[in-house]
Image 1 (cartoon, rainbow, N blue to C red):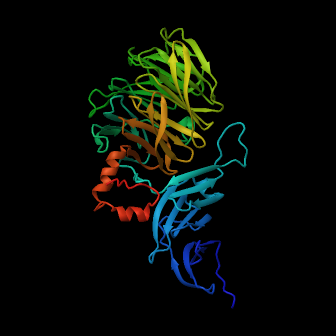
Image 2: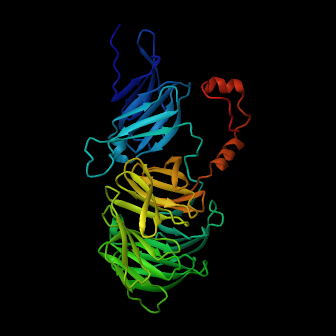
Image 3: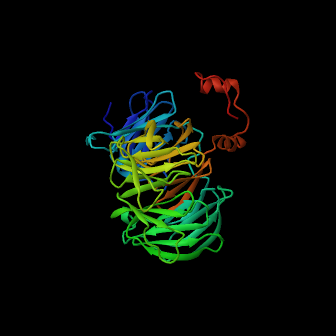
Amino acid sequence: MGEQTVEARRLDVAPDGRYLIAEEDGALVRWDVSSSGRLRDRTPLPLPLDYHGYVSVLDYGDHGRVAVVGEGGYARVWDAAADEPALLVELRLPAWDALNADDVALAPGTAALAVATPGSDAGPDAAPEDGTIRIWNLADPLEQRARASVPAARADLDVSADGRTLAGLVDGDLYVADLTDPLRPEALARVPADIAAGPDEDTFFGEVVPRISPDGDTLVIGSEGAIDVFDLTDRARPRHLARWPVGMPVALSFRSDGDLLAVGRFDGPVALYDVTASGTPQPVGEVPTAGSSLVFLPDRPVLAVAGTLSSVIELWDLADPRAPVRLTADRSHTYQLAELAVTGDGMLASVARDSTVRTWRVLGDDLLARTVINDSGDVNDLAVSADGGRLATLGRDRTLRVYRVADDTPVLDLSIPVGDTTQDLIGFVGEDVLAVRTEHGAVDLWDLDADAALDRICSGSGQTITRQQWARVLPDIGYDPPC
């Protein structure tokens, strides 16, 4: 038999030996393998428009499925055994992890995909060789896209406590939208705001921080050097009320009565402002620590502070803002805190770059630990629904994880890869919709109601799967058609 040569950077052979998949000069190609070992019938796999040719890892699994991870920040899966190969799934990864992936594997006999990447869990004990393994269930019926979006190249937004108002900056304009139907946001106002972040908008210090007051009538926006105050009483005609010189605000939180505003500053202690004061107010008090995330407990003058570049959570009694009293400090997290959030009934949640999510209750003056969740790698942001029924995290792997919470114990409900254009800001709109800011293009609104998603899928699925079809496709699972 003569020698046959194919120039390929990566290749793998089907388990039954019938096909070979090769990466050839930026293309993915299927070759038929004859019984004598000859390659014939070269068939390119369909490639998306944004496909890049550098492949880090490749796997030919069973049932004709081929998985590839590489340049562009994608994991992709094809049905390569069909007469006309088809792209089945696209999952986003951080670009660095995709370029440097160590391995990819399609689990035999299942719809699971595993990718090993160098994106290690952070922390003082993390070693350079540490990595993260991400596992996706490719058969999950959850739609891999948002249900609605607010168009924006750059957006810094907050959602009111009642879930009706979305407000903040969109591409430098003050933007207000009605979220009465959160999956069909209605723009109410968009006017020039003359507010900008720092000279480098991609830095922590240049981030714009918006916050809507508890009654929904006031919007404050912290940018480098100032806080701007807007009247939202008439949401269609927002009015600029004042600009306060503040320094470098990185976090804002209103007390539940809306009269006191805490301002976390990277370059100084937390400043406390009486927002009912006329003119340009001066701080009425200070919490002597720098805070990168702040939340007031509901119906109590107690402020929880996540220290800037710190792993410590502090509770401060602000019954008299002129004389704050530290109640407690907890050091359970082992690495830098990212975010705090609190529910309407007082459950406190925290996430950190030690790859954990923790929930707490405040008992008297003490912080009582309830649950520790090991997430995947760094946890960059956190959101909880107002009624405490759901908790969501956004990880370094750009995956949204949504937990249902019962008795302060979160149980993973949904896991959604959202891609590396997603930035580190998420927030609930009611109980079943999650707002996620993207790097460019939109603030996406995700419908988390699994039953509603299933209804949408079933509405176009045709006839119910028969027992015979079910037994052929899912022989190890009892007959239980979703539609």
